Length: 105
Image (cartoon, rainbow, N blue to C red; front, side, top):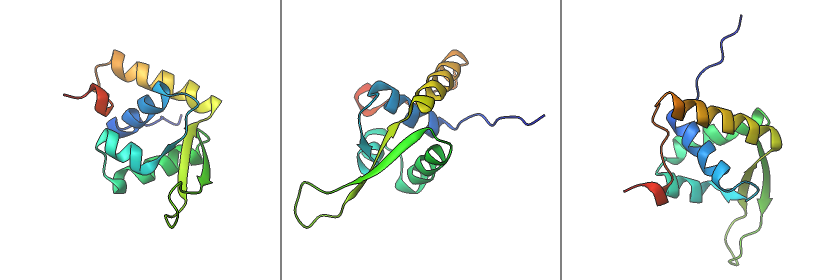
């Protein structure tokens, strides 16, 4: 039997952020600032979630001329289902799901 690994607290925080804004696109820099997760931790999480089909991705041109395009992310339907279960399980088990910046003191 293959055991599923429990998501890290950072993965749960990213998932909770996406759940709070279902359907909205987010770019990595915004997620990193809001959750205070370093880019070296965040981008592997985003890639892993995308590879598993939990995130949809796209590139968008910057609104500011001369700025590079941004890689945007949002939950897929499968991702919403997975994230809802993972975040609820973590909260039920008191695993300390980090809050978004608005919920932090």
